[in-house]
Length: 79
Image 1 (cartoon, rainbow, N blue to C red):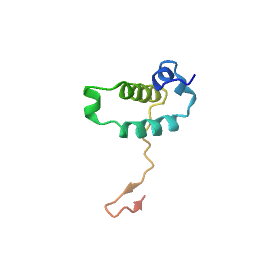
Image 2: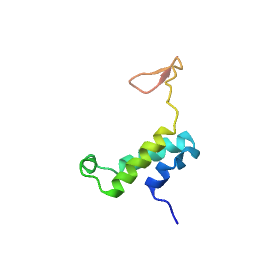
Image 3: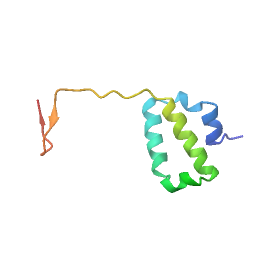
Image 4: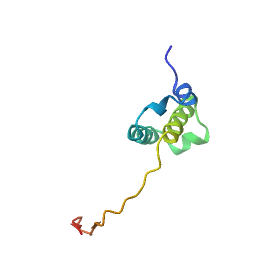
């Protein structure tokens, strides 16, 4: 029997995916949900939200690194 998104989220199945896969998949899933869908969600929307939340819970916090470069208004790199 195939698990639903909600079952996978509740059983923490997304913890086995890489952090990059989880972030990218969460972004793709979020693009398919309209903000108004959250006000009165269908079961499909709730399952998708559960997947997004569980995927993001299984990622590490991203760190912004300063490489010593900046991009000017012409999009050229300068050191």
